[in-house]
Image 1: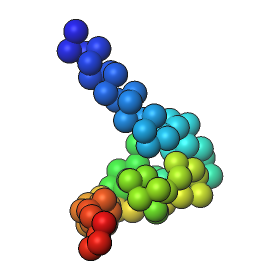
Image 2: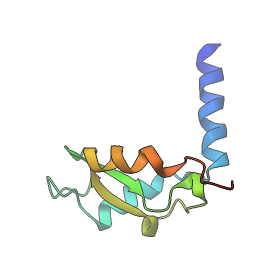
Image 3: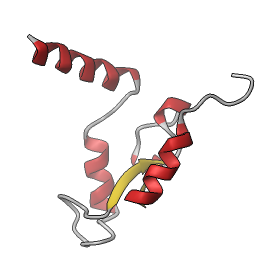
Length: 87
């Protein structure tokens, strides 16, 4: 039963933020992994990042993705969805 609840939460989050599981795959086909040059599979030391975060209204599209190192991604993500003054 817990797995069903977890699955429903994941699906709900995907719907709320408009996630498309094919977008990261298409992104990597067009922009291969910086560390391996591969167009599929893992990319050691790098992560895909939404340039304009989904929580800020960014689109889940290939054009809104970029490669960041794991450290760069951590730093960027810390402030991505925090409330700005006046929100």
